[in-house]
Structures are given as structure tokens and as C-alpha cells.
Image (cartoon, rainbow, N blue to C red; front, side, top):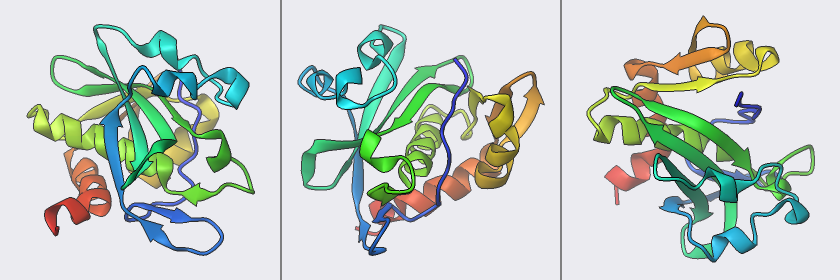
Length: 172
């Protein structure tokens, strides 16, 4: 599946789109209870229940101390020497000109990079991008286009993203 998300803003966590207030976040595995709220009838574009499999890891982004409201979701596969992002989606209320929070997609991509470092893959993350978004991902994430729709985030850019989003983890 080709990814179709926009990096609206690279923040240090996520921030309220209207006020600019910043909020600390956590990335946690989704639970069975979460599946009740992440449905197409609740405005989500993708069938996240279908993403759950023995080879995929599905995570939710939440504001710290508010585990009930999911800000976005990411599905990852751990490959031989990199992390592959299968799917990423902002919560419906974080999309469009009236979005509530900015920085959700960037936060989730930074998390994928962090997982890559934890697996000793030097931060390498790959994903398939829609053609119209290839230039956007080059500029916003520093990803490189390696052919067809395949894009890769390399070590230097991955480290920059991890430090940008997870500096709070290092300074708590």
C-alpha cells in the first residue's frame, strides 16, 4: 500500500493547530478496546483491524496522560535490516484545514525511526509513497526516492527525527 499522509509540521511533540500549545505524547501498542473507536464509521479511512497480524506491529499516538483519544496510528513490519511502514493515518480530527493537532504524522515516522535504532538497523525506515507525495517526503522527512514509489529514511535523517520528537524522553 502506498502511503498518503502529509507532514503538516515537524514539531517537538504535537501542538494544537489553533493555539500552538504543545503536548507530550506517548506511542503505545493498540489494544482490542482501541479497535472499537478506529473504524470507518468513526471517520478513519483504513481498516486497522486488518493490519493486525503476526508480522505487523500497530501503534497509537496519544497525548501523555490521555490514553483514550488516539491522535494517529502506524503499522510497522520489522524486516531483515530496516523497518517498513505499512500504513500511517492521522485521526480524522487531525486532518484538513480544521485539524485539532499538528505534528502527528511526523511524530509517528520518528517513532518508526526510533524502532529501527532499537533493532540496530541504524535508523533505516522504508515506505511506499504515492507518486504525488514523493517530493513532499523528500522535503519534509529528508527521505530519498530509490525507485518506483519506494522511499527510505537513512540514519542521519532518522536521528534528526528521533531527536526532534523524543528529546523529552532524554530530558525527563
